[in-house]
Amino acid sequence: MSNAFFRDLHARFDASGVRAVFAPRKPRHPVLRVLLGLVGLALLAVLLVAGLFVGAAMLLFGLARRLLVRGDASPARDDRIVEAEYRVVRNRDQPLLR
Image (tube, rainbow, N blue to C red; front, side, top):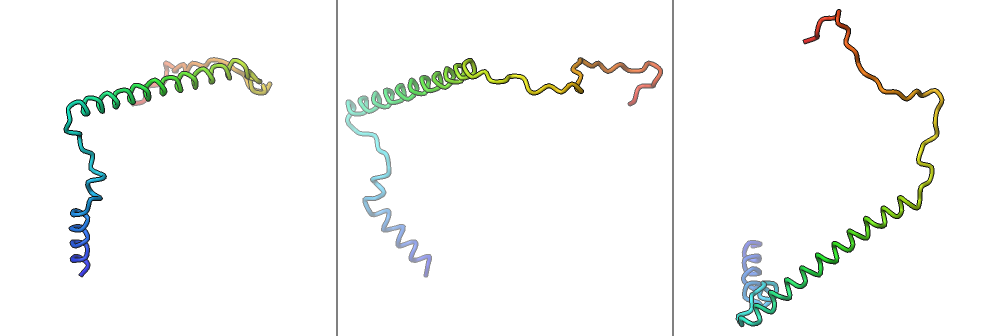
């Protein structure tokens, strides 16, 4: 029973004008096609330029914030910590572990 209901509902949806509303169609008139293509390219260019400006503004804001808000750059120092560079030296008398 439910299969017949959904089959009937699907047939009603296909026959209605609702499906045609959501299906994009290219206009048949060649001038209108070119005009809509140019509108699409212009919209793409506007979004690209806007994105570049937003990205540049974010970078400039970050740089300005870093320069202006210095704060305490170094953490509290502990006298028990010794900063140094270390190098591991292998003992020549020991055999190589393989």
